[in-house]
Length: 391
Ligand code: TRP
Image (cartoon, rainbow, N blue to C red; front, side, top):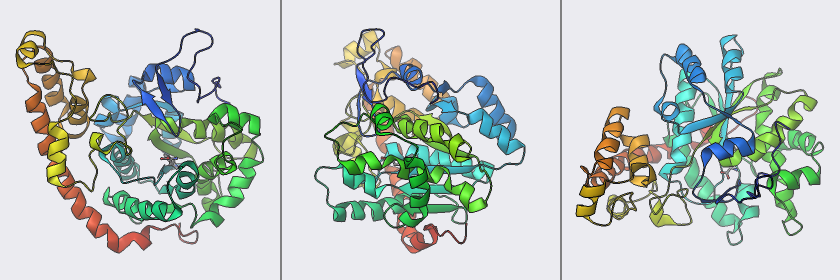
């Protein structure tokens, strides 16, 4: 494996003897995350200014999500840019576990994926792991997962991916295209490796234990479709990294390129600084939320401000510990506006009410527009479905 960590699952640091106060696995994200520590733990690389310059030399600009550090870590991103330069165009691959409705935190990596698709003219595979979410969930029926799968597809299409270059894979529907590759992968992975990488235990159901090769399979599908080794770039939140470590480990032996990744942070929840969560709906803004709900969530959000206005004026706020600040920075402010907002907040010259108002306004109009596109998506769902013959 690439600089294999002890385990992606346990966050105890044996060598140092102290425990991290956060947990990041594909199924659980908890606590205040130290992203630099994750780079160390997972053995990934940080996105350096040289890499950003390389991107700029190819696209003419540096997207704010790269520049502002939302995408902060990678494996082989520089390699895949070089491949692209030399005429080996890469595929993009990303996905969604349909366990609930989609919120703004989910949209960020997808919006960046669309941006990459437009800039590099890439084909994209988008996987919906309905099997994974059914297997993992204690209380969701197959029917509920099917419902979320249908709803989530509308959101994915509404992001604006190129209909001619994007195909959606639903695991239970398109399994015949994944299964042959998945068995090749599965045969190379022992239970002991799977336990170390994913933290499975004797009480994990065996569906979960057998699942990871299904998420790995789309990394190699482009090579099968094109009949040659095809480089694949995966934009995804950092919690998915265990899958890619496993996939990279077997790639060579199966005769494929290792998939490259760029890893994002999480958009913080509006309740406090954890990941925005579907299981705590009041802390996230969903694409299905009504304007009044968005207004209410924004105006009652947790902030990095002081307890009273006079204290705020005296001491200033803490923008970096404020979810409202991050929301505005990533979604609605320009870099300049955001930097100014930070200075004003720290110096006690900006009150939380103003930022929360800006968030309410920005998010309401964003979601109104998004909903229009989501509705139109109903008519083109089948066009987006994976079809081995036409890719
Ligand atoms: N396991 C992911 C989730 O729970 C879904 C997923 C499948 C995915 N393939 C992916 C995410 C590729 C990012 C990239 O959300």
